[in-house]
Length: 616
Image (cartoon, rainbow, N blue to C red; front, side, top):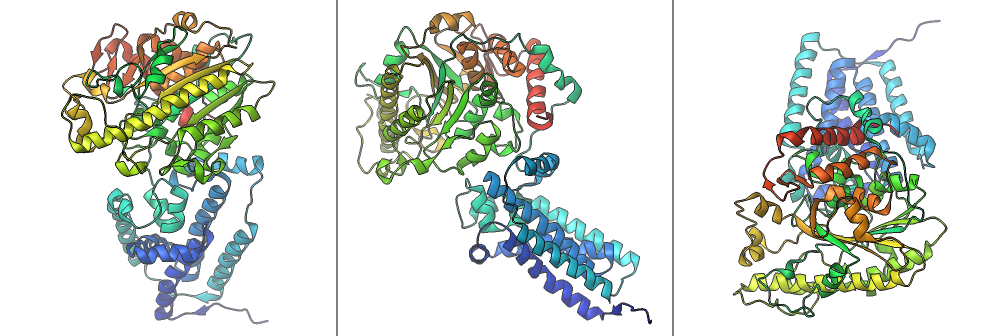
């Protein structure tokens, strides 16, 4: 029998196939991603630059593959397989976690494979089979047809040129944040929708090292692994574990208490908060958070993990975007202690990637905007009154034999603070200062939201006092509000946020209040318990201590060495921020004292280990 030989192809046909394959493979990749390919193409048409940004990585991969394999069909097959599988993994991850596949996830490949066996995933096997079948057909065509093979030096030179060009685009185009923000499309906070709209190849490369976690200098994984045994205390828990509720209130501050305002005790917008904070049984103080004007999720991250957003990396602005794996946290620690966990936020589940991140932090019982109705809106946001109603209903529905840990986030007082927010003009701030019209507008609208938040808090305490089970309530703000460009309203109030001259003035922009309160059914004496763990009423601490402190105040230790360590570190370095420090004696300093640096080095190394190295 005569042996079948591969047929040669003319060079022009080889070039034509290669060029035609670029949009064809790109279309395959876009079809595999979640969402409608027609809708994606519509967004690409509205932003023509996206065509090039999605086609180029396919073209570069195809060219490099040809330089390596010397066969156009093999090259097309490899390119289709590589980018098709990446898009397929993105589809599965979005469907299962509500979070797109980014380059950093490649380092978690082992955990991803394990997750396939741990969760009931819709693996979309039909799409995977079609992809593999297409690649196999292309591979067989490569065996059947022989394509021209350029000389080695041409392939080497071409490969170097393509690789160099690709590196340049990765430096100047794909990470360009101004370009990314300027594209017409969905809110950039809805990252899965952005991937669907702008195309997987572009978005995948845009996210290359977009949210890095810097490795501490001299980091040693073995040393960090030993911290748990070295610092974990003997395990203990209270005889009666209280239900714990942490309410993080959007942009809540005690700004109306400034001397710049002339409010009386009862007409102060936060009168309800002040009454509760002044109660002899309440412990209150101030937090130094990671952001000012925005950054809600970063405060969540700091409080729930005990880690510091601003120590992740100077290039990382959103801490939740670095959470791609199960991560030790306050909810996970309390789960070990027998708690059930619950999260509630009257916003979209995709906002700040919360649905996915809270699952990684150990809370799968979650309630979002879907629990509310159109009547629950006050302007563009769910009102604090509606938030309280759904929270109370959720707590009643979750009563059980084991205690409940709840973390809830409000949204009514979210910016912008313009008169159009509520459809009416709130009362102007009570002050003798000659404020500009703009500052008056911002403060009027913002104080309206503060009043509603404070009254919601007071009503919540009344509800909790009607319960037979013990409750420990922690209420705090996430960040100060944005009251005009250049800190306009703050400047007019005499606050030096835009031109601070001292560390105290610098940190003032990051200061928010907190209070800890217990209902009548709680048997403990909060002030006495706080004093026993070194917390005085009116103290100022960094937000990354708050979760650990709450658990210590409730009577828990020895369940997680990192939180035990934080509770000890708080007594020696109560305020530590990249913006400055406040020491135990009240001294402000712009840098951590040298004697305390080794303590922070342990915390920072441990943070990196827990976030990037530690296995479950």
